[in-house]
Image (cartoon, rainbow, N blue to C red; front, side, top):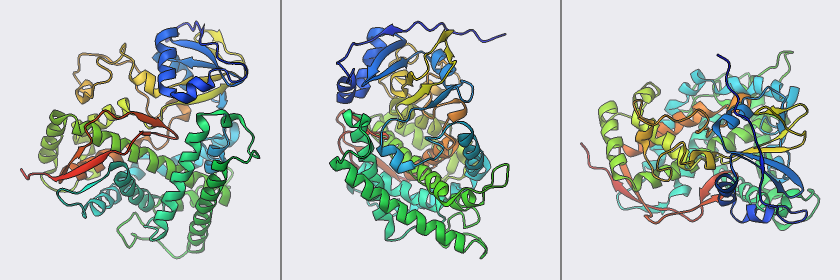
Length: 463
C-alpha cells in the first residue's frame, strides 16, 4: 500500500522584530523557543530567523518525509562562519555531486564490520583511562568522559595516542566548539567572516592548531604508507586499519583519492563527531543513571550475567539489551545533536504542499523526543519504554538522534556501540554518583550540561 502523506498546513508563528525576526528569542533559549513553537502553534510553523524565512516541523510523519526526501531536494543550510572554518568542505557541509562523491568514499570507513574491529580499542582505551580512578575520587564528569573518548577516537582515527599533543588538540577543539555556540545564538550568525569579533580570533587560532596537527599526521602517514601495518604499539587497530589510513586509501569511481585538504576536513569531522557527541552522551547517561537507582541496578545485573567479570567485546553488544536501551533513552532525553536545518531547493513538496525555494526547514530532536504525544512522561528516564514488548508504540522518526535518510550520520553504528561498550566497561567496576540537582542543557555544537557535573567514584561491590 502507498504511504499516506500527512497534509502540511503551516501556521504563522511569532512575528518577531524587524530584520532580526525571532533571533533574540531563539538565541536566549533555543530549546524553550522551539518547544513553544510546537506547543503554542502546531506541527508546522513559519517564523523568521533574522531575515530568513524558516519552517519548523514537529510531526514525525513530516520529519520522516523531510529527512527521506530525494537527494538534492534540500541543500545544506550554510549560515554561520565558525562551523565552516572548523569542518571545511566535509560531507557535513557539502551537497550535490560533490557530497555524493565524498560520502561514497568516507562511508566504507565506518561500515559495521569495520566498527567491530574497533571494539577492543574502545574497551582498552576506557579501561586504561579509568584504571587510575579510586574509590572516593571526585571529578568534573564531562571532562573525564572527554579524556576517555579522546583516547578512543585517537586510537581508532589515528592508530595511536598523540602523546603531549593530545591536550593541545583537545583544547583547540573545545575552543572551536565554544565559537560555534557563541555564533549560533546571536546576530553574528549572519555577519560576514571579515567582521573582527573577539571570539573569531580565538577560533582561528584554534583551527590553526588543528590544521597543523592534521598536516603532520597526514604527512607522516603518507610518508610511511609503504612501511607496512600491524597492530599499534598501544594495542590500537594498527596503521592498516585506522580511519586515517582508510581515508587516504579511499578512491572514488574514477579512481581519484581525496586531496590532503579533503582528508583533513573529513578527519576533523570524524574527530568532532566521534569525540564531542559521545563524551556528551556519556555525561548525560551517568547523570541519568545516578538519578535512577533501579535502572543502574538492572544494568549491573545484566553486566554480571552477560560478561561474568570479563571485559565486554563486540560479540557481547547484541546481548547487552538493557545497556543499549539505556543508551537509547539517554539519547532521547539529551540528544547531543539537537537540531537539523536544511534549505529547500526548487520544486520541493512536503506534505503535499510546495515549499518556496530558499526556505530554511528545521526539525529538532529535542522537541520531537520530548513530545508527550509520542512518549509518556517524556521528562522521565525510562529505558523500559524501549522493551520489545513495551505497550506504547513509538512512531518512526519520533526518535532520530542520528538524523535520517541519505544524510543520516554515517557514524551512528560506531557511536552506539562505543557508548554501550564504554558504559559496560565502567559500570563493571564503578558507580558514578553525580550532582543530584536538576541541570539544564546548554546549546552549542552539541547539547552539553550548562554547569559542571561533579561525580563521586564508588568502587562497585563485587557480586
